[in-house]
Amino acid sequence: MRHGRTVIFHIDVNSAFLSWEAVYRLHHLGGKEDLRNMVSAVGGDMAMRHGIILAKSIPAKKYQIKTGETIVEARQKCPGLLLVPPNYGLYEKCSKAFMDILRQYSPAVEQYSIDEAFVDMTGTEGLWGDPLTAAVKMKDQIRDTLGFTVNIGISENKLLAKMASDFQKPDRVHTLWREELRDKMWPLPVSDLFFVGRATAKKLFSLGIYTIGELAHADPHLLKIHLKKHGEVIWAFANGMDVSVVQSEAPANKGYGNSTTIAFDVTDASTAKLVLLALAETVGTRLRAAKVRAEVIAVGIKSHDLSYASHQMTLQNATNITIEIHRCACQLFDQLWDGTAIRHLGIHTSRVKDGFNMRQLDMFDDTDYEKLERMDATIDRIRGRYGIDSVKRAAFIGSPIDHMSGGISREKRTVDYKKIGVN
Ligand SMILES: [Mg+2]
Image (cartoon, rainbow, N blue to C red):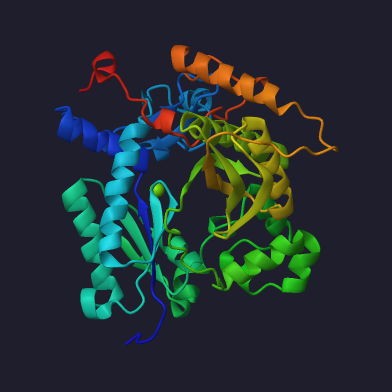
């Protein structure tokens, strides 16, 4: 019996965007072919010049097609690759239905990305049975009611649960308890360890470390010399140590926020700040549309190592100006960020005020806020009339980052299936 032990599930939708598209075509469009069994991928954003692969089928994986690479690269590896456009509106709906099922099992659900979540199942044995039984029930319920499959990893912490969900796919449940590390995780190549990227793996190879087990048994001081703080982090991971807790969402407070999971890991501040600009655009637009201003700006960072940090500041004057929100967000980001690769960024605003805005004068600040407000109002009007892409900040030209990220508008974008044709 594992009585009293912490039980964490990591649930990961198998080839999420692709599965969701496949299910939609089969069940709602009368499609006969299942994209999941074909050499196929979701590629987008087609409208942007630098389209990347967002998801691929298991058969496409055999051609070494990787999420995050460009469509051009993918086509070089496999000219016959069937590409389908992204449909964010559909993903939002599928994601929500998926999360709703998870919340039937436990109140402690942390949505980690659009298709991944951690659930703290500690103490639910009386309701759902032992962890393995509960996970099979959860997995089957998702498959039978929503039509797509998930993998569930079970362990006593988030890291090991996440490692376990990545074992053999699809439609599987795997445990990775601490006592199973030796058999199930240590024989794996070190590059399979969460948080070991290509560059880190290369350094580890040069130290003669090829498996996760070899890393676990390496001298942490030596790792620190060669890999700095990151060396200690991955050494702890290889030994199954992780103390982060499942962060259920904070109750929705009155405010306006937006966040985005980035398709690739952001490792430099300037890219992160560009993402923050895209978020400031959508948050600012929403505040202005509601004719309100916010006094508190907060930034949240979810890192590749599962940690989450957020920071907020109170402004002297409430604002809804895009570049002012962005300036605050960058300041918070600089205070917060420790250099860890970033998966997800968010801006949240609160203490919202409506009505007339009296700006307190600051003799050290000669910014013409009225002019900035007029500029935002003009941009909003143009976008309202000609679409959100009609005006774009120069910083986004040639960048793979959507200049209006995490927002309302993009998710409403749908696909014209008549034009594509579904088989
Ligand atoms: Mg997934």
